[in-house]
Image (tube, rainbow, N blue to C red; front, side, top):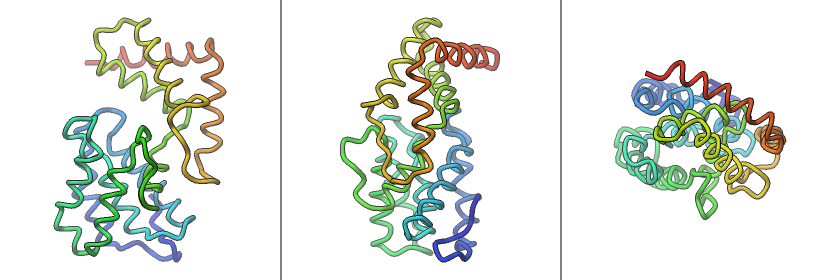
Amino acid sequence: MNTTDTNGGSLNAALKDFLEREILPCYDAFDAAHQRSHAERVMAGSLELAHQEGADADMALAVAAYHDLGLSGPRETHHLLSGELLAADVRLRRWFTDEQLRLMREAVEDHRASASQPPRNIYGRIVAEADRDVEPMSVCRRTVQFGMKHYAELDREGHWVRFCQHLHEKYAEGGYLKLLFSPSPNTERLRQLRALIAKPDELRRVFDRFYDENLKTAP
């Protein structure tokens, strides 16, 4: 993980150690799309954007670490529970003021791509953008994994229909996912993903590959 702050120095080492030791292990209990590697990727992306935008790197890193902790509860409201967990964690008061923690809670609450309103502050925009992993194969793999875990009653063709519907609703031209920065590391990846979505035959081959892989690894 990149540990350079916006001034070219090091992040607060004690904070970084706390997040890696006490917070990241929580992700080990979540679904395949939200394991520790996901949180680490969002943290690294948040640091990159904090550097680009001149934001506080420690705040951005902590927001990213807490952004999905609420997946311990209902998925539909995980962003709100994640914000509650951050605000309630008195250990963070070692590094952040009440006002910083208020902004950080807002940022965590606002990170979902499906939110009807844009994030209220720069840290919400940073974590939301870093959370938008639009690398084509990663998106397709996660979508298949999520469908097979949560819609076990569907057969292959049912999963294919759901897979296509989700990709079109979220990622295609006119979909609800919007990039929040320009330039963004996601710009070219989203273009590539949209090109794949526009090619049904190629998209079906990708779906079948990940579907078969998941069948082999399913318990």
